[in-house]
Amino acid sequence: MKKIFVLLMLLFIGKLNAQTPFENWTTLNIKGEINPKWTLVIEGEQRYNHPNQHIRYFHTDLGLLYKLSDKLSIGGYYRELYEIKGVERVMEIRPHLDFFYKLNNKWKVRIRNEYQIKECSDNLYRFRLRPTYTYKINETFSPFIQTEGFFVGVNLVRNRFNPGIAIKLNRIVIEPGYMLESNNRIEWSHIHIFWLNTKIKF
Picture 1 (spheres, one colour):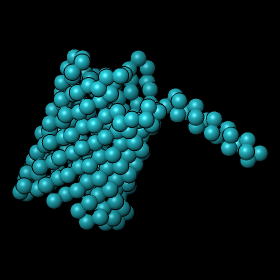
Picture 2 (cartoon, rainbow, N blue to C red):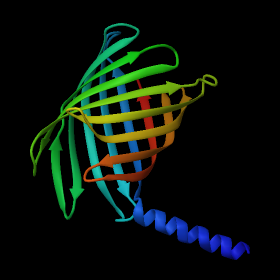
Picture 3 (tube, rainbow, N blue to C red):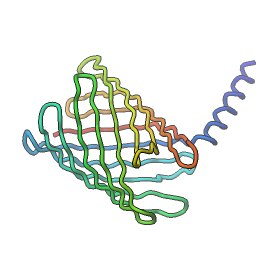
Picture 4 (cartoon, one colour):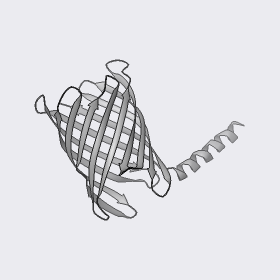
């Protein structure tokens, strides 16, 4: 009976993986405080696609973050990314302007306005809204849950549902988690993502 159960589970997982790709995303985010108002931000991220067995995406960010108040900060960023689409490797430049607002100790929201300058298709403006709820257990562990909607005009074209945990180790924060990315093209499709975000602050 146990062998039959294991066989059924393997068949189910195989079918799920065939229908729903899964990936690993790793991100390194470095912030250096210039003064109490200004912070320099550098980020790199790669995305490994398991069904195709290759790194399908990589981006680098360079930006400046300005603190308006204890609740509100504004950041301007330049992003350059390389992505495999079909059999081609394409480049995209994606400048974006972020607003970070802290509602209280548990809720915060990021609003991103980005312009996609594409190599092989039309340029595109996109609006992204990401609320985050965090529950602080102690000084080291803070589990969180967030969702991010991507809008082109009034149309929701993508959503990322993302639970994880922040583990603070002095100036380093490690955030492992899971993400379900849902994309609305002709019909909705989904990607399972296991990610690791490492943040270093100077």
